[in-house]
Image 1: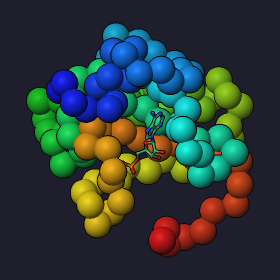
Image 2 (image 1 turned 180 degrees about the vertical axis):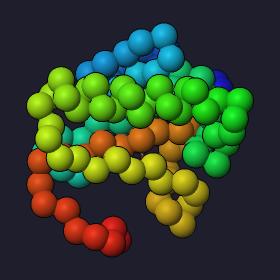
Image 3 (image 1 turned 90 degrees about the vertical axis):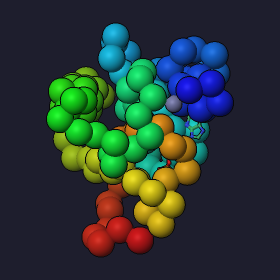
Amino acid sequence: MSDCLFCKIAAGEIPSKRVYEDEVCVAFYDIDPQAPTHFLVIPRQHIASVAEVGEDNAALAGHMLAVIAKVAKDLGLDSYRVVSNCGEQAGQSVHHLHFHVLSGRDMTWPPG
Ligand code: AMP
Ligand code: ZN
């Protein structure tokens, strides 16, 4: 999608501090970290949100979760939170599927 920020990051047209990439997805540090460690995992393919995940792209979503586990392990994270905001009321600001991975501080539940 030509005017999508995360499509541009995935394509390397906008710089990011990458922590992992493969043919399917890219992981990079959030520009406005909300925890000592805060990175995002996005698919290279434009998918707007979790609401667009169906059986046709379920393997991609599963792969993204496997990447989260691998990167967290590689970074030595033993406790972390995985979040995907879906829709305006939930706080989604970039309409390209992404999982936040946050770690390194105490967290509260329920989230605000
Ligand atoms: P959300 O608000 O859940 O859609 O998450 C979007 C996230 O993207 C926010 O945490 C932003 O800080 C992050 N973000 C926005 N622009 C960039 C960028 N250029 N590089 C890295 N992270 C970004
Ligand atoms: Zn996109």
